[in-house]
Image (cartoon, rainbow, N blue to C red; front, top):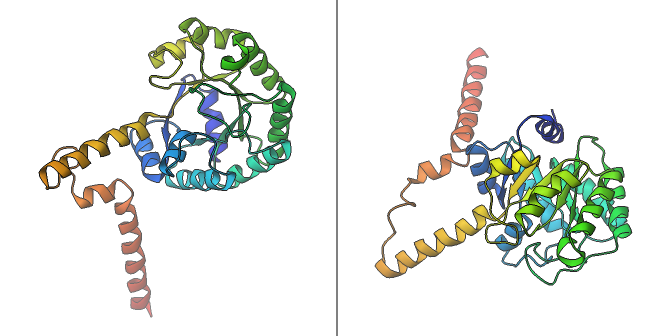
Length: 294
């Protein structure tokens, strides 16, 4: 089963998919080890890991190569941020091909003007509806694997209002998108209305202290959402944990105790050291057996 087929199977299942955001191979592995069924490559976290804010400053190449690192680090499907598709419909066509080649299961393409901004910041701008729909049609046509999931993200709620956002989401599904991602509904009533008014499966973006009210993900599932991504969880947790550890080092002049108190071996085991050791042992034993048979 391909990664895309695995994601399709999850979408057909009874449970809402919760995909925490990861920004590198380590955080992707932590998501998988925590038992989640899918991992989301956060664009904001990818930009932050490169030392930039989420202002559309990374190129297709940078985003795709990071997605490849995540995809090869885990056995669960990776859903990736593909920003605006990096241009017009020609660029969107290539974008799908590049992510698909890297083993990504699905991507979302949004209707912001490039360079885009984080969906929970002010001063966003959107492209005309037909320009975005053309990119989505191109993205769907570009798929070599029909299971590859194309997600239509509209940021129009903040710019043109909730009704236009719903209309865009429905137009995107009619154009062939597999999933609708209405970014940043601003009230609980809007959050609940999205799965009722959009004529297809919907994705919810869970951003702590963003524009969307906080809610229990079990409630989101009951509302009818099929996917919930939690993009900022790990990269903001990493910032806070690093600040704490660095402050302790500066204050005490000693390596801090506490959350960082794992051994070197324990740390390496979280990124596959035991599996790599088993490979090395297997090849050595095989070589010895071959020599003994000669």
